[in-house]
Image 1 (cartoon, rainbow over the protein chains, first blue to last red):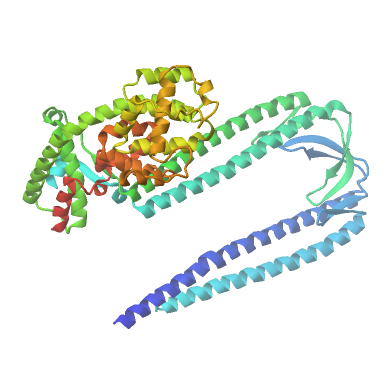
Image 2 (tube, one colour; image 1 turned 30 degrees about the vertical axis):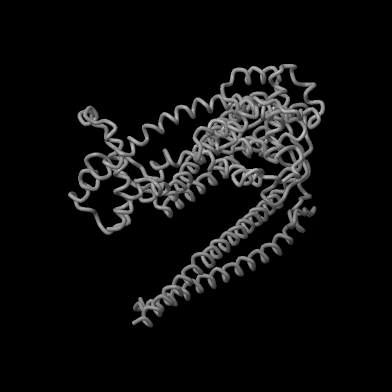
Length: 149
Length: 420
């Protein structure tokens, strides 16, 4: 009888440990990874927009343009760009490189493939974390000797 | 307990505010405070941004154009320049923009800044409120863990008219019965409780009779304490006006008190040590008589040699030096004089205070209890707070912490109850 009680207690502790692992480790990890993947999605969208804009400039042969610059707190001022043929593109780590339109488009395609690969990696990571959560939950179910769903 | 329900209730705080619940409440409030702090930081960031933008907008029309990098999407920009620097498009909200001059924009931004400041102030107020709440929770938790008991009685005019001090005693009992019943198994039945209450009342009555004499003493003590406050002044800073000291000495009826004041007041160079020693010496139960007798017998050994330069600062009142001399002589007799190297205790009674010169509080406490006549004087030099807190438990702490007063008849009752 005492054996059974001790066994039950040990099982309870194990279940508690597994649940803690899911709640404190796997789930925060999952949330974190999803947030990181969202950030990469954002970047991908930025570069996609940039590519479309440059293609537009190219198609329309725009060499000078006017735009509104956000000064902060949604206050805009007019800005003039006398020469649009040279564009500074963010290449990461705070560096900006002066490109022509063609160079910029090349760079953007390289960058896009890289971002797509990153997104794939994150997606796989998320899937594996989800699988781990599932596994641990299954383990808990087995420990509690509940019938499979 | 039916009577208790009618009369009032006594509940230990620990039962109402469970420790883990209070802890959780504290944690929750702390979390809320952290959230509000983050929000406050965000608001302050907005405020700072706004101030920076105001200064930028004010400077913009200074020139016709500014060279800038014009952003082109999120990841690229062109070299370009700001034009029409006095024409700004300001978002009013809901997607409506208005074209304003730089000056008008500044006005808008100022209004926004004021709004932000108000929000920051409101947030600060909220945070301070929450902090007060957290403090309350913490203090409640501490009180609950200390075993504080809440005694509550509904106000009822009819019963209030009939009631007298008995009510108080009844509530007193309630706390007892509760304490006892919490340790005993189950609720006591009504009859037994009634007899117990009556027994308790008898005890309290006897106690009250006994206390009649002590209460008078208390009054005396208070009076003396006031005197002592005055005396304690000079003992604390030796730069005290000497004349005042004289007045004090003349006015004071208590010989030993004035002695203490005059001595510690003139203590001068190593006052802290010697005054403490003298204190302990004077505190002795027999010390008063000794001092008294000594004070009227002028001694041959004057203090001039012991404290050169002191007498020069002292008013040439004839009484003061006399007394001082005496006090020193008294010191020497008890071997706590300036020269501490003479361990010649006069009696076993005197030796212990001398030894415990540095930590004189416990002994003083004992002595005070032993000789109520000396209470007043000893209270003058020793910190009052300590004395009060150490002396009180025998009188008032029985209310708050019944378990602490074990020597009183109360405890017999409790033991009787607990024995069941």
